[in-house]
Image (cartoon, rainbow, N blue to C red; front, side, top):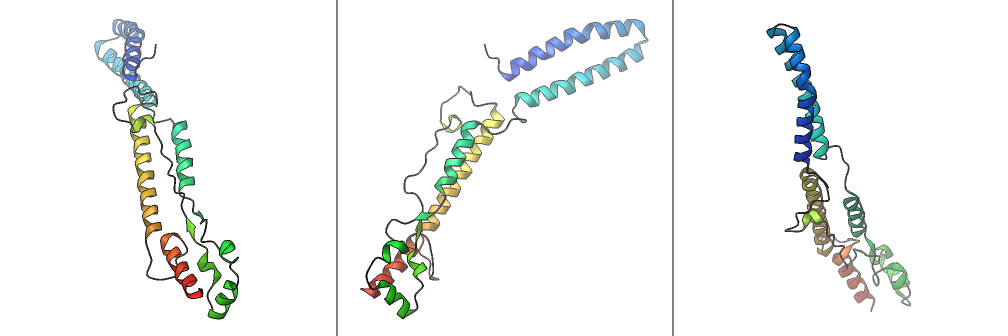
Length: 193
């Protein structure tokens, strides 16, 4: 049977009191009232310090990221890696007869035809900390779950921002990624045809 962190802390506190109680009583009997209170206060202070360390450990402050979080973050990194486009890449387009000569005669860099895109199928993580109504917190203490949830939130915001950048059309020319690059490549190909 698993105990929640509060139940563990309370059981530790009761055990600590049962161990320390006789010591405080014997110290009180052997010395004067003033020194017994000081000794009892020191013992109580060290017990509270030990209880604080145990509480921090149960709250997951010394734990690293969960294995699911680490695996999901790896998938999110893969999601954000640009890859060559299926059609707008230099190797594919240079197969068009005469295109290389047209680019050379007009001083157009063939790199402008090499567009990078992002994967169209998004990775969708389904961690327990992000699902509504889930209360079986097998993932760790609430502080760690909150940290995991914020990490997922940040990754989805970063991916959203990156995909918006790849759908933008730059007015500066020479854009080598996304829709803007494809529009530039289409204008070069229209000039060729």
